[in-house]
Length: 288
Image (cartoon, rainbow, N blue to C red; front, side, top):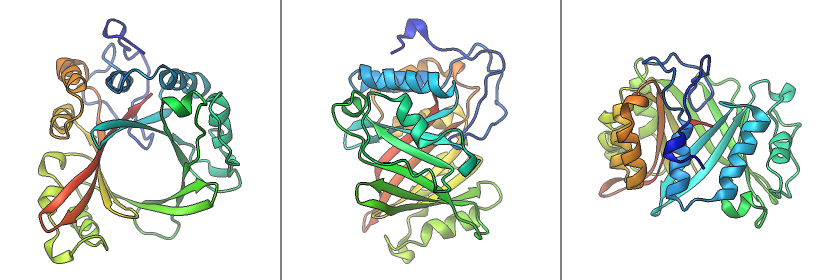
């Protein structure tokens, strides 16, 4: 775990990428400023420390290299949780495989056979202190495949467990500047709420619309929307509004001038009822 006296800083030639591991041009000079990993370390500290989880993060860095793993810090039910995402768009020719990542995370125990014959381009693992230490097995892997034939960039997520594969989520990617009508139509068209009372302004929040990509997700029991490549000030407001831990929010605010070179990805899972939209989970993402 990195104390504030040993903050990680951007070196020459380091990649900056969004939560799909697509590179972007920084909005401000990055050299010597803070890596987004500092937000992960601060969040782990806010969650109680979790030394084995922090060690697992370092093991991923050693195995895959810096900037090759995407982390997600999720807030729901008054607690934080952590998910880690791995990409290799070569699919069956991949070098970043589930088997490779599981080997890197030893002593983590996972009874699931790696599905290496499937054409996945991405997978994710939910990790906590118990799983990272091997005291509890990893029983679910989230596996993502493409959606050939769709005119909209999209992906399909399956949950792999001892019971096999179960369809979990669909994700649809839109240009936030050019495709807003399609974004609204996709978010409004859902089995989870009444089309006639879709609360557009509370789902597609105006303070988050100045981004580059918006992802609309259809999930088993709710929907979600993700705002990709936000500037630092909307990100800081997101952390405050979604009530992330006060120490994390204060850290980000205190270092605003050293975080303005990054573009941020955030997400909201929500339900809709007679009182409008209710956020049930919020998350932000960065590079490890």
